[in-house]
Amino acid sequence: MSPTVEIPGLSFGATQTAVERAIAELRSGRPVVLEDQGQELLAIGVEALDANIAQGFAAVGQGLTRLVLPAPRLTRIGAPRSSAGTIALPDVDLARIETLALRIDGRIDAPVALATTLDVAVLHLLGFALVLPAAIVAPVSASALPHLMRVTKTEIDDFRASQVRSLRVVGRAPVPLEGALDTEFVVFRGGEGLRDQVAIVVGKPDLSGPVPVRLHSACLTGDLFGSLKCDCGDQLRDTVQRMARSSGGILLYLDQEGRGNGIANKMKAYHLQSQGFDTYEADAALGFDLDQRRFDFAAEMLRQLGVTAVEILTNNPQKIAALKAAGIEVAGDRRVLGRPTAENVRYLASKRDRAGHYIDFDALAARASD
Ligand SMILES: Nc1nc2c(ncn2[C@@H]2O[C@H](COP(=O)(O)OP(=O)(O)OP(=O)(O)O)[C@@H](O)[C@H]2O)c(=O)[nH]1
Ligand SMILES: [Zn+2]
Image (cartoon, rainbow, N blue to C red; front, side, top):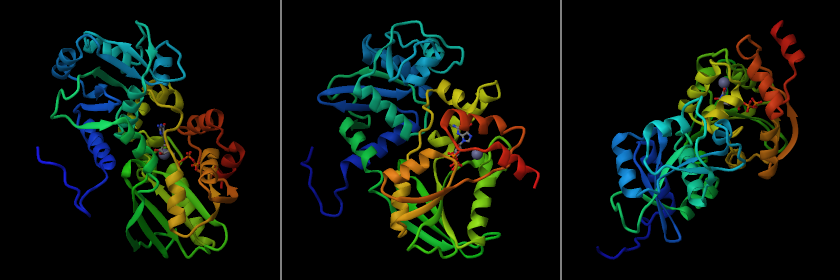
């Protein structure tokens, strides 16, 4: 191999590129190798496993292949845990993996050990890749499988920490909206998973005082198709129109479909909801915590737009706390009422009861009869 030459302008951070490529590999259903202090771990998302790959893991793992599951999934299948755990899987038995990782009536049938820090890093990578957080891992010897994408635990940790810093504006233009003619879309690249995040600046808000702001997580079903299962579409359009009618404001449209789980996992959760689970029980059965989202990069978007203080429009106390923690002054908070439907009332009640959202059903009922 020729020696590595650092060329100014072309020597990109190895951290960023390795992690981004590892994410792409996992999304494509291929395994990656994680490294930490001389240890190497071959890893793949459970959903990508087929008989061929299982055979490969059995050969390489030599009896040491394991399944890594997050705490909510372990709890669901009968082994209550507060952190991720791992189960020995020497035979890489596909039917057993399906039962433990995917089946809703799965039950634990073997001891659960504490996941290693490298195991946890695998779950973080799967989270970035928006695939189900369940992994098959096997120790590999140094320099085995040289054709696979390799990434270190430090690179993954740095990637998680650097997401806020990498944010920049990549495009902006006026987009007149129904009920809000003077509106500009400002697209940022970066933040969560390096996806595109959009700030919708309605009117000309006065940036010298608290600016009306909403952080709105994407909801394809509700925002675009008017799904009756949630209140997102109403909240979105009502907020923009309220801002347009008053002194303007900024809505951040965040690429965080399914509370950060991705649309595929949200549909898996909806499938479980159709069988009687509530919104949080369904996510937990799949292995997700209450909420995957982070909002620190949203604070950075606001800063780059010149906002230092906000009046936030939300029912979600975590959004308020996250903005404050990220150094934005929250001068006030106002509620955003959607419309109650027979299909979303349980969802709204769960958000109030399980996640402490400020949802006033009397106000909603009054609104419904407007
Ligand atoms: N995982 C999961 N996500 C859902 C479900 N229903 C809606 N979502 C997602 O939940 C998120 C709702 O985001 P927001 O509208 O910002 O709502 P919020 O966190 O309730 O906060 P406020 O609306 O500001 O009070 C969106 O990303 C939706 O896609 C569900 O049943 N499961
Ligand atoms: Zn929704």
